[in-house]
Image (cartoon, rainbow over all chains, first blue to last red; front, side):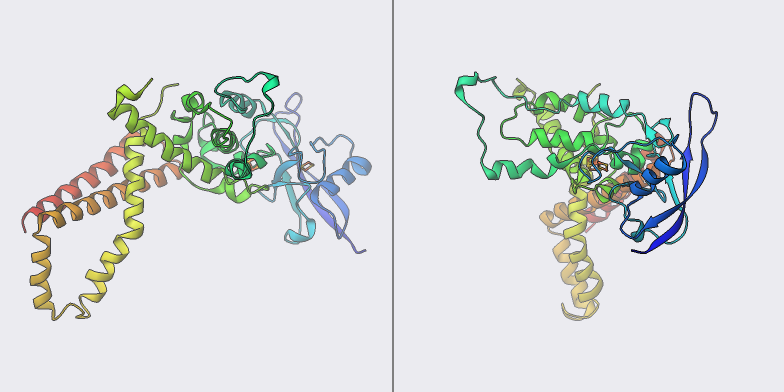
Length: 248
Length: 115
Ligand code: SF4
Ligand code: FES
C-alpha cells in the first residue's frame, strides 16, 4: 500500500467564540484507498480532537457527511482522495447554510421546508388495519422510486445558485420528495402540497440551472422533478383560471 | 403563501422552447439552406411561391404563433439568465425583455399582414 502526505486545508469556526471562520492546515499520511472522510477521522483521532464534522455510515447511505471538497459539494465518504487533483485539498462546510461548528451546518431551514411539503403518504381515506396493506404494482413503484432514493445529504442545496440567492426557495431535495409522494399511487395529497409547490417560493423560484441533479450522489434528479411539477402546476393554473367551476 | 401566477409566462416559455427545438431548425434549413441552394427552383421563382404560401391566412397564423412563442421564449430565457447573474431588478428586466418580445411580435404581425 502506498502512502502519500497530503495537506488538508479545513475550515474551522466556532460562532460562539470566534468572529470569523479561518482555515487550518493538516498534513495527513493518506492511504491509496482512502476517502476524504478517512483523512478527517485520522485528523480527529491523532492530530486534533477538536475538529467537528458529521458522519455515520461511511457508505453513502446516511447522508450526513456532505461538505464542500475543493469547492464542490460531495459526500466525504464517497470522495476518493486519488480521484481529486494532486495538491492541497480544501474542505469547507456545505455552502448556503449557517455554520454550527467547523464542518457542521445548521439544517433547521431544510427541515422546516421538508415538513411544509408533507413528505408522507396521505391516503384518500385512512383504511382500518383489518383491510390489509395498500398494494402497489412494480410499475406503480417504478413511477416514484428514483425520487425516493434521496438521503437528505443537501449537496443539492449547496450546489443550487437559486437557493443561495433566495433562501426562501423550498429547494431541490424537498421538491423532489414532494414529487415522490405526488407520484405514489397510494397518495392523494397532491392538492395539499400544491399550496407550497405552486407558490413563488416553490417550483417557480427554480430557473433550471440543473446543478442539483449534477451533484446528487443518488441520481435523484431533483431538477427533472421540479420541471415536471412546473408543467403540472401550469396545467392546474389554466384549469383553475379558465374553468373555475371545476374547483371543488 | 399565495399561488404564483408564473404559469402564464412559463407556459408560453415552455411552448416556445418546444417550438424553438423542433420547428425553428426546420425553418432555418428551408429558408436559410435549401432555398438558397436552389432546391425549390431558381431564387426568383421561389420568392414568388414563398410569398404565395405566406399569403395563406392559415400559414400566417401558424407563422405568427411560431415567431411569437420563439420571441417570448428568448425573452424569458434572458430574464432568467439576468437573474442567474445576480441582477435583482427583476420587474424592470421583465418589462424590458417582454416589451422587446411584444414589440417584435407586433412587427412580425404587421409584416405578415402586409403579404
Ligand atoms: S436530492 Fe440528492 S443531493 Fe439532494 S439531498 Fe437528496 S440525495 Fe442529496
Ligand atoms: S457517512 Fe453516511 S453518507 Fe457519508
